[in-house]
Each structure stands twice: as structure tokens, then as C-alpha cells.
Image (tube, one colour):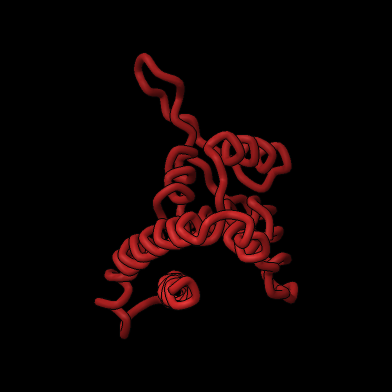
Amino acid sequence: MALKHTILAFLSRQSLSGYEVAKEFAEGFGSCFWKASQQQIYAELTKLEQQGSVTYEAIPQPGRLDKKIYSITAQGMKDLTDWLTQPCEPTAIREDLGVMGLAGHLISHQEVMGEIERRRKLHAEMVQQVTKMDEHFIQHLKSLELKDLYMHLIIRRAIRYQEEWVAWCDEALQAIAQAVQ
């Protein structure tokens, strides 16, 4: 998966400004699956526009730069559907905390536990945030359009992912505490 596919997926649902796309990555659904800076997002939108995958409408704003509302083009839809029809393999886990597991013995157990506690808190907060994203879908579950059902299902996956992190942190903290007694 590339950043471009994630942006095209957002735009396949609705037209968005660059700011709105960036906000999805910072606070919305995109924050569950992809980390991208505002600079990376705007650079990718520019590339997608140059490739003909997106177009934009410039909305004048007095005293400010024009607001660009991006829409996916037929070419962008083809690029996205071509990618969607390819098999996708499980993604390798790239996790800093995993490296801490390899070399955590080089620092104090308090430092390791402190980082695990910090991460537990972050993942518990993400459970709440992602669960809130799913509220609308749950309330209308029986009448969801297929595109919204897919969104609900992947949000459910994100919730489980975050819950699993919380459970693992609890398990790790308990194991370390018992080991150092």
C-alpha cells in the first residue's frame, strides 16, 4: 500500500480539501493505518494531480490562498481499483517496541515498563477515538450502503488492533513485574 492509494481511497468516498485529507490522517480514519505528515500529503496530492489521478477546484478565499477541493478522476479510480484487485500480503510488523524487546535488557526494567505504560495509555486512547468513529455506523448497521459497511468492518479491525495492544501491554507489565520481584 502506498500513500497515494490511501488518498485515492478517501477521495473515492467524497471530494476533500487538502486540509481535510491531512486531518483524516492526523485525527480520522487514516490515523489508524497510515502515518503521513501534511507536507507528504500535499506533495502526493500534487503528484496525483500531475498524473491525472485527481483534479481540483480552486475556491477563492479573500486574503488567503485559494482552497483546493480535490476529486478523484476516472484515471484515479482505475489506478485505485487496479491496486484493489491485487492480492495483498500481510504487512511486516515495524515496531520500535519490538526492538526494545530485543535490547531492553540494556536499560533498567523501570524504563522499559515506563515505555510500555505510556504505550498502553496511547492505545487505550486510540480504542476510544476509533470506537467513536464507528458510532454512526453501528447506529445504522442494518441500513448501511456497502461502502459504509466496509468502512465499519475496517474500523472494527482497528478497534481490535488497539485493544490487542492494550492487552499485550498489560501482559508484558505483569510478566516484567513478576520477573523482577
